[in-house]
Image 1: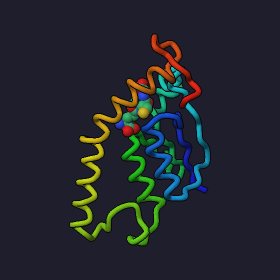
Image 2: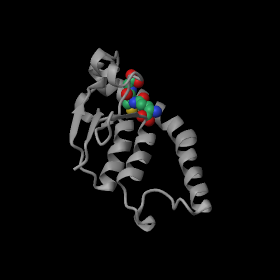
Image 3: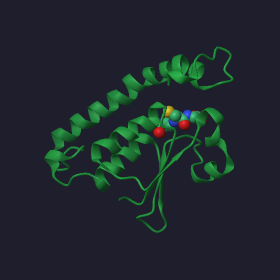
Image 4: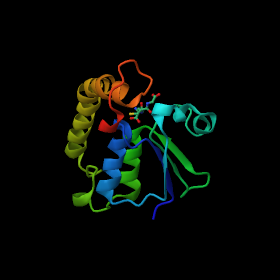
Length: 147
Ligand SMILES: N[C@@H](CCC(=O)N[C@@H](CS)C(=O)NCC(=O)O)C(=O)O
């Protein structure tokens, strides 16, 4: 069992990116705190104090003193894979640190995901799904149960 608290809204894409990594790693999270962004809980002072970026996901890893506070789903995913993933490179989610070509291809894929896929998909999901289905006071709000 890790010493990690995960602050998340499990319905939305950035936290799901991280949940996928956690699932792949088979990592046990000590405490999962749901932060309902449709109710703007991520902007509450006690949450902003923990993560001034005012977004989810973020983690607190109490393995360290002081604990590591980390935001940004991709940074957290890479940290978890490095800290808690398999040390056997053939089973790792990350490229072999001694294989320059594998690292280059990994970085290429990561860059494409960030700049070509997510740049478009994130806006689309936000406008077409999140706003109408999750934000209850949005003018064109539809059926919240769909998400
Ligand atoms: N680049 C950040 C983006 C974090 C982010 O924008 N998360 C969204 C959910 S997908 C959020 O918390 N939105 C609420 C807001 O920005 O007010 C990451 O990958 O973690």
